[in-house]
Structures are given as structure tokens and as C-alpha cells.
Image 1 (tube, rainbow, N blue to C red):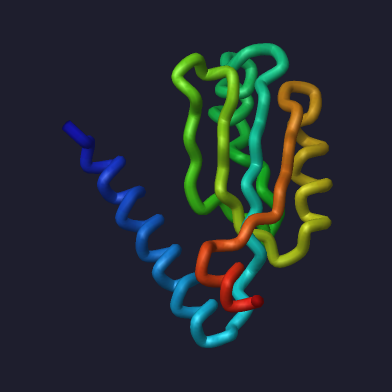
Image 2 (image 1 turned 180 degrees about the vertical axis):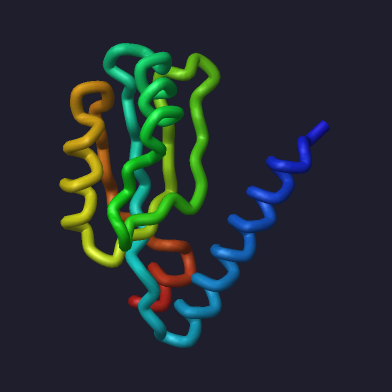
Length: 116
């Protein structure tokens, strides 16, 4: 059974993607999306401790749309929005002692084809 929190997050993600699809059809350009793969180099416990103590440490203009962990807890995948890709340098510098990052710009399906 899906928990209410998971249902709310899934609904919020659907709304966000619907907004992006509508923007792509209209030719608008919302903030850029990025898929972020994080590998917890010292395991998940130190990352969790810092999250509990300090939060995500995201600079203004960088936002997590949705986040998933693989079952082992060793990696997290986040769909993120950024007003400026340079914001990732500020964010990752605060975590690079515990996390290695792979950051890839991505497009929703409609935006990709609208640009063709």
C-alpha cells in the first residue's frame, strides 16, 4: 500500500511535469531540469546525519523536484531544477566529502521534440 506522503509527492511530481509539458507546448522555457546521481562514498549514514543537522544546503535557485534512493541506500537520484547550472558548484562543494555527483541536463519528452 502506498503511504499518504508518497501519494502527495507523486501528485506534486505529476503537477510539475504537467506544468512543464504545457510550457513546452507553448514554447516557454522554465528552469532547466537536471538528473543528479549521487554516490554516497562513505555510505548513507553520514549523509543522513548531515541532512538531519543542516538540511539539503541548496542555494536559492536550485530545487529538488523529486528524489529516489536505490534499495541499498548507496545512491540517490534526484530530478532537480536550476535557474543557473553554476548553482550546482555551490551545492556540491558542501557535500563532496561524502558524495560524488553525476549531473546531467535533461528535457521532458515534449520539450525535446518541440525543439526539433
